Structure formats: C-alpha cells, structure tokens
Length: 416
Image (cartoon, rainbow, N blue to C red):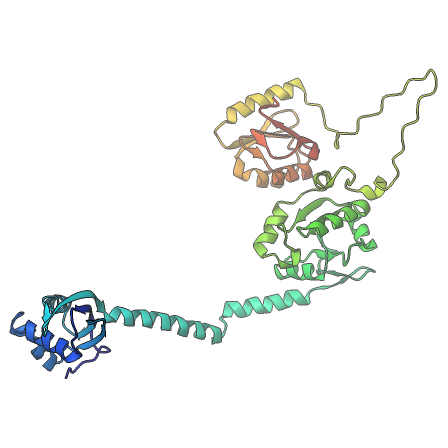
C-alpha cells in the first residue's frame, strides 16, 4: 500500500485508459507495475518508490461497455517535476493488459500546490472582507462622520417663510437656490453653506426679496421638473445664474465632484432663458406677465412708424476701425503662443500672461482691463469674470459662447 495520499502529494498524474476487452482493476494495476519494472532503473522503480512513500496509491477506475473497458488512472507523486514526468510517460508504454490490447494516454500532470495556492487566495479574500466589515473605522472615517453630522446640524430656517437654509445666507453675497430640504442637506454635506430651498414649486416672497439684494444661482434638477421651476423663478425673481444636475439626476443625489462641476459650468440667466424659449426671459416678473399689445394701425394718410429692434439682448459699444485693426494684429502675433494681452481703454498693453492664468489675473486686477486678446477659445467662465470686471471685449481664436448671450463683446479671427 502507498504511504502518501493525493492530499499530501506535490503532483498528480492523470491518464485515460482504453482496453479492447474485459479486464478488472487488479489486472490494470498489475500491468502497470509489471511492464514498467526495470524500465527506468532502480531509482525510479515504481514498487520501491511506493514503498518509500514517494509514489502514492495508484487509483484505477474502469467501466465495461459493449465488451470494451475504459477508465481513468490517477498517480500521486512527491517526486520532482522531471521524475514525475518520466513516470507519467512510462505509463504510456503499456500496450497489453492480460490478453487484450490497451492504450494509456497521460492527460495532465497537476501541480497540487497551485490548487492549494488558489484556495488560499480565495479564502484569504473572504477572511479580509469579513475583517473589513467588522473592523473599527480609522481616524479619518471618524472625522468625516463627525464633520458630516455637524454640517447636517447646521441646517436651519430662514425668513418669514421658514425656508430650509444654510447658516450663512445673510453674510453671503452669492446664494444658491435649490428645490427642497434634501438638496440643502446634500450641499451642506459638501461644505456649501450659502444654500436655501424653495420648499415647493411656488416661489416664496423670501426668495423674491433675496434676489433683489444678492447674486442668485438657481441649481435645479436635470429633468423636466427643473425646467418648470426655472420658468417660475424667471417670472418672479431676478436670477443671475443657472446650473443643473446631470441629466436624469436630482441635486439631492449627486456627488461632490458633480456639484463642483455643475457650479463651474453655470450659465447666465439670459442664456438659460433663451434656451428655455423666447417666452421665458429672465426677470420676466417685471414685464413678462404683461399682455403684449399690438402696435396701433396707422390711420388714413399716416405711415406706420418703424419700431425699435429689440432682438439684441444687450446694448454693446460699436467697435471702431482702430480697435479692429489693433485686435487683429495682436491676435496674429499671439498665434501658437498660448498667451494673452490685457489692454486698457487706450489700447495700451497692460501685460501679457499665459492663457491658463487669464481668469485668475483678470479677477486679481478687478478693474482697468478694457479688452483681452488671447490665443485660445472663449469659454463661459472667462465671460463670467469679464462681465463682473467690466471688460468690454474678449478676442480669441474661437468661441463657444453666443455673442448675443452676454454684454461683453465677443470677437474671433473670422470677425476681424
């Protein structure tokens, strides 16, 4: 009998056997020992290897069907790779078992340690998962949990309408208007404290009064309900900026990254009103609900006086020939440099900066910049800063902003 089992073996030889006749299991085992005897030398004699425990118990499972026998042979081994492979190859020289022809084919030599290693890895994953679920949170997790609870406690009520709001509404020059209490909680969670909720679809008087004194950003859901709230705000309040949650999402469920991205990409109320439809212009509450009156028909002998053209949303200064020429020359000079010229009202260069520092530079100067000529594309954030600092012209290689959506003059190389 063998002294090792497949469990303690390093390798296992798997082979198939086909016999043209009917034989029993002892016949197969006898043929294996008998026909390999003396074949491999004394060091690899199967009987001696089994006696010393280097070859384990040889398992043979056979079935007889229609006068033929077929089955599988399993040989456990604690020899090294080369010796185990030699023993496996020796099995294939057996061509007769008893009176019958036979064929033995080694299918594989299995490294038991690989199977054990895979088991260890999978079990270790399970144990680590159980450990992580039951382990105490680290200091950072504790700090985040405490900070979150403090921010949630900061939610209060504001105004006579007792609207859910953050703690710094009175102190902030800019406030964010959202739909409900859950939206306020989500923004407070991510450190936005200048937030107040409408608490419904009807705009409260508190919001109307705040819109007259502060810069208002409407932050609405990315669905049809968000459009309805915007239209109501436009009809009653003085909204300055508009932003939305990603399509199909609500403000209360978006992540910190999505909140920051939405606020960076906010657009002016004028552009948002244009996108909603011509009948919904910002600040519509002041004149948007008045009935449109048809101009009187001219009487006999009278000509109809031409009506002023109100298609342009902003009255812009007409660019002069000198300005056009200066801008064109500077734009050509900047091609490929990724730089920007800041000019005063006399078209004198105040300075040259990289385009990546353009927004921060204009913010820091605050006033005195008449126009900006740069090698780049005119984006929304640059236009917003230009509006706040009273820049008259932005001149770039291209633009993603419609010229009629802002009071700043938007010019590109094609316009010059």
